[in-house]
Length: 298
Image (cartoon, rainbow, N blue to C red; front, side, top):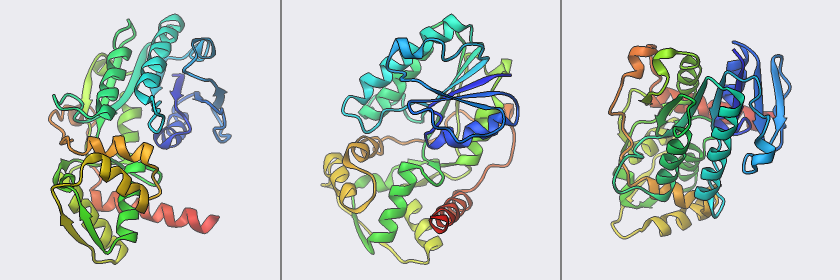
């Protein structure tokens, strides 16, 4: 099997590319084409917003993974739609057998944030062609380098008392990066997954306040959360910009999406690919350990 990863240098892509390379040849596609050298991996630079640049990128590919996300750009929704249109055109031309898309849980809610609405639109564009699509929908992916997870860690580290908006009580079902990678690699080439959509989540349904408290315990810190009803998503994003490494252009669409519950409602993926899921505490512990190791190497 020859796989292509679109968005190979992103948070998920960096973990997925070497995992796929254990099973066959991988084309790692990114704007920079700067994927680290590894046996069985070929890096390819392509601007997927350009139809001309995209042409030929999926030549000879069996399964293509769509992980591209323009969050942080002012017109991220339009850019993501344009990329998806170019990808499906090229996938059809190249005869790709399967597209695998990682979307967001909660994107079927009637009260969608712009971020989740964009994820839904991207999935719809990818599904509009003759190439079968497998969609996996996830909430917060817990791992070192995840914007959402790193934001929560920064809040724990910098604020002994958090004056937090109501979204800290929104239920969510975070999933470990390793478990997402296992699902992504597991659906490749599976006839049962073609044209299907699956929810993916870890074993714990918690709210964002509990995520903060669990990370604080792992950090050996005591943190107090004071909920207030008046902090709007826009103000929340500016608040996050002041106290976390995430810029307001990224924080705002993420925070606006936190008003939507992101919980698994369809667990069929567990029947197709059964394995023990990683708890949030264990996933967070691993991610914090990797972050510490990364700082030590610098």
